[in-house]
Length: 316
Ligand SMILES: NC(=O)C1=CN([C@@H]2O[C@H](COP(=O)(O)OP(=O)(O)OC[C@H]3O[C@@H](n4cnc5c(N)ncnc54)[C@H](O)[C@@H]3O)[C@@H](O)[C@H]2O)C=CC1
Ligand SMILES: O=C(O)C(=O)COP(=O)(O)O
Image (tube, rainbow, N blue to C red):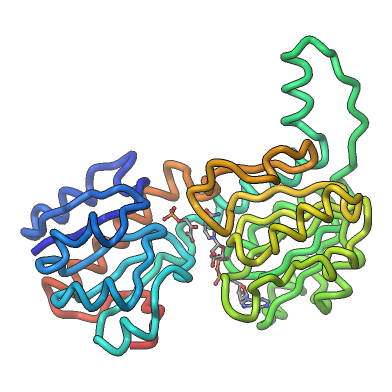
């Protein structure tokens, strides 16, 4: 019985998840994150479980894996997994909510600070011997707009309160108690967009959130404001973001996620008012160890003990 893993961060710091699989008699096959169907094919017949980062788990892959019982997202977002096709075949899809929330919230906040202080540009210019005097935007006391006040969004809100920020939130579902306890105001998407100095995105990618920030929405932002995206590439329209950044519609932006990943070149990468990172927001030692162990726990629970796994995402 094979377990295919395409998450580059699986067991990166801690070998315990590998030991647990071996002890359970499961053979781990590690493949690159961007391994396509061709690379997976020789193993699929004997595969009972998959641990994936961004592998496109589509109907074709599922049809080629007749013994597949569970697909574990090594993280939170399951937008790369066909939830209907897996459900029809009785294959569980699970994720690991909560595990990387501190890592991702820290990262989002670091992007806010990096945008405001133009740190990448400041460092580059200082290294080049230009001793740049950069006059920056304030963060302390400004207004932040958090779209998607879930596990990660809430952690961003708590960090923002530490910076004495006014915290606006927009979410399809509201946690009135958390908002009241932490001085957070739920507002409409447009109110948040118009009033925020920093907008940070923390929704899943769904049909409702796809292209949530297109040029029309960006035009509602203050021209002095910044857009931070650590959710998924498709939530922001990248061509429209390029226009907004080059035409002065907004002051700056940062993204850890892109429509096509890996993304080795992109017109946005050339802009001084855009900070790109390579989908690393969740990559800290604590976050990654937790995630690997929880994926393996679910696999053993279901494949070996025939019990229901935790955190089922496809309604089985
Ligand atoms: N860059 C990275 O490495 C990482 C990115 N992510 C992304 O961040 C997303 C959020 O993660 P969590 O906070 O852990 O998930 P979560 O499920 O705890 O929170 C998501 C929030 O978005 C809200 N939401 C859903 N649809 C909405 C809509 N149409 N409009 C407004 N709000 C909506 C939900 O009600 C929920 O409160 C993930 O789905 C994933 O795509 C997550 C971890 C790491
Ligand atoms: O948790 C998520 O949704 C992420 O984006 C991070 O995924 P990864 O840790 O790269 O598998």
